[in-house]
Image 1 (cartoon, rainbow, N blue to C red):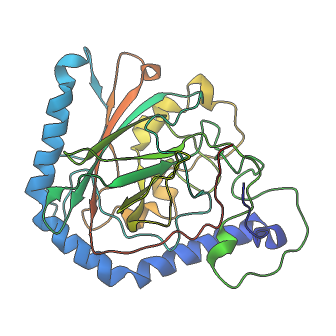
Image 2: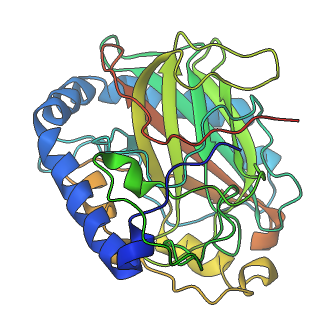
Length: 333
């Protein structure tokens, strides 16, 4: 484990962090508005290709026949590609990147598709397609990395905190001069529910995980990042700063789906407060103008505990360049 300097929140408390996070998120949205609008215009041109991309992936899995009694849960209308504003409306995650990747990112995670590591929760199969918005074609060999909280709202690497940042350390830290205050020091060497894998020749990668839990100040979500020209280290991890980072965003779920999940056993042992999508800091900005960061969701069986299958497409601009801000990284034994 490599730790960052102490968090500014240890000095001012979690309420101050919430204010800072909100202000930082809004500032990031405004700062990237022009490039976001350009991405939106390009993606609108890809709406037919995106619909075909989704259809091909669902057909390949043969959802309707393979899963007897499939219960399609509420989602955005995939067959209504345009709303009145002219934006696509088809489960395509084309997001305005945040100012940072959030406070719980850890660099150099394992290259793997199954990230569960025995964590309890409703099984989640996450089918992610990556589309090049400059060509409207699927992007192969793009490295997709995901990370999210467990069923009780904790991130690996930071299990010593009740989020956001309510640790026991009261030592006043130095006031930072950059964005690193958003990332607290790591408290453990755990790495559950983190990892990444490249898309195949069809531009698709599929992960095995669990449905995320909720925690104070945020709605249920999964973080996602996409990079090209990436490098895998000999120890089986991704070299997080070696490639071209094209996208940092978040994937959300319909509240009606979460309603079914959070009453199951693994999600009950928590004292953290759940927020709905409408209450979230970032959700409105990432689901406006016709754009939709909500995963298309299916229930695999009569009971929610039997698992959930999701589809989402991430549109990326191959010319975009972003960077991770977290100084924390994980090194396997």
